[in-house]
Length: 447
Image (cartoon, rainbow, N blue to C red; front, side, top):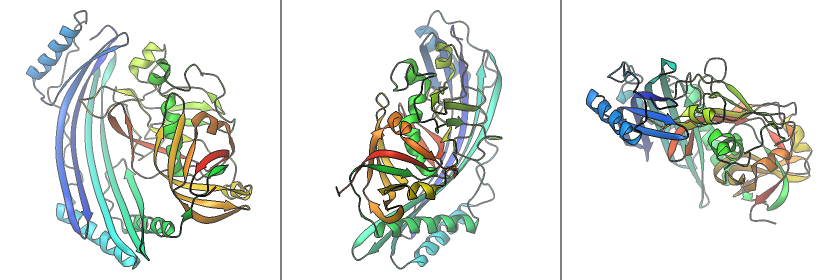
């Protein structure tokens, strides 16, 4: 391999999805992919070749190409497998295509019968079965089977000419078909609830004010505004607001942030849970901020080596055609001792943000803008009416410093979390307990 190692990565994957809308099946896909990636590491340099063709000829071409780019590279690891580890069968072999369509039809009928204001129901169902094998010169050969299941529901309602929607997703890292009535009916009812709440929403206030962040999905703010900044590559290159901050205070002493990819004793069935990362390193529990102090970065093999550390098990890639890089797995804030209702009761005027839509973050500065998709006014210690189009504007480390209460209600979002970085998308988990931020800038229509 290269002077500092590398790896051979094999992948085989089967994926299928169905989309139901306008009372009919609008689309269905079924894909099989396979391929290999070969990487050489030398200093801070990574050389990578990949191919969808699992043949000795393709492997020889990849090896030759890497040797041409790096004449000083050592011999390539002996490849013991010429075929990718194929899934034994398609996901859910006992559930036919007709069964899946019938399931979506039942869900659609159930949603439309719940309320006369329902004008559109959009459903999607996805399954993915991925097998990988990783070979490294300094490491035993390791493999992993990853089965992912997703179900999403979006309900659109209309009343007096006003249209709003509610969206809920459910993701599991296991072989599940979501045919349990209690599961999918609960999801659809929640999507409808969100839509009906939006129908009653009033314009959001604007200005600096206290904000209570609800538990679960609000962890997306933590993920984007803080989590990415604690990835090792950004810190090694000095591109993060947390660069050179190891051992320094970066948050309130109430704040402990953890990334935990372990599927057995850590975070079972969440989309960010992995037995091993995509470099073959076992995942682990990594404390990133410990009681307000920066205590760790998420690293892959390359960045850990360059920083004089061991990989934290966060080397991840989208597919065999991509090089691994430091990525989050399941990132969350540890629970505190406060009750959420006490946070609300402590505020004279503020907002209670329960869910988020899109947002933007600058990793270097930590500045962010996030749009809420479910939020409420807080007036005189009471939860008030729902508000619409509220945006939260701030700086990640600054917000972490202003957390004055952390809830006892930690929840990881059960939905489908995709994280993008450098053109690659991977599945992640996120969450947090409720917490009170003493002041944030809220963008809205009323001042």
